[in-house]
Length: 306
Image (cartoon, rainbow, N blue to C red):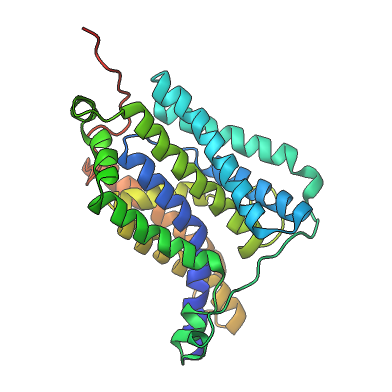
C-alpha cells in the first residue's frame, strides 16, 4: 500500500508540467489557433523561471516571469498567425525552433548552477489522513494550481459567456463576428493565456520537478501536451486525465528505480510515453478523425469588407 501511494505521488508530480501546457493548448485551440510552439514556450519558461528564481529567490516572481515570457512569445505567434494570417503550423514550429535555440544560447552560463528549489506545501491536518494525505495533500502548490486550472477552464468554456465567445471563434468565426465578438482579439487573448500556462509549465520543470537548468529540460513534453489535447478531444477534463496517464507512465521508471523492481526494462519505460504519443497521432491520422476539433481550427479569419 505504501508503494502504491508512493507511485501515485510520483504520478501527480510527473504530470503537472504537461498538464499546464495541455490546458494552455486546449484554450488556444478552442479559440481556433493551433500552437505547435509549446516546446519552445516551455524551454523559455524553464530558463526564465530558473534565472529569476536564482536572482531573486522568489518563487512567485519566478513563475510570473516565466508566464510573462510565454505570453510574449505567444503574442509573437499570434501576430503572424492571427494578424497576418500566416500558416499556424509553420508559425508554431518556428516558435519551437526559436525557443529551443534561444534558451540553449542564453542558458549556457546557468548550467550546473544551484538555484531556487520550490518545496512541497503540505495542507495542515489533511496531510495526516492515511494513504490519501501523503498522496494529495503533501504536494507542491503547483500541483493544486494545475488541477485547479483544469477545473476553472472546464467551467469557463462550458458555463460562461466568455467561454461561449471563445468556442464560437473556434467553431464559426464569421458567425461570432456577426454577433459582435471581436474574433481576432478573443483568439489572441486565448492564445496569450495559454502561453502563460505553458511558460509556468516550463518553470515547474526547472524549479520543482528537476531543479536546475539544462538544455532540452522539457524533454519533448511540449509535443506530448499537443498530442494529449487531440487524445482528450479538446476537453479540459480529458486533458487532465491524459496528463495524469502520461505522469503515471513517467513515474513508473522512478518507482522501479526507487524500489529496486525490474519487471520492465527501464529504457522501455522511458520511451513508452513517447511511443504511445506517436501511435495516438498516427491512429488519428490514419482514421481521418478530427474528434471534437473546432471547425475553424487553424483557419485564419478576416472580416469581409463590403
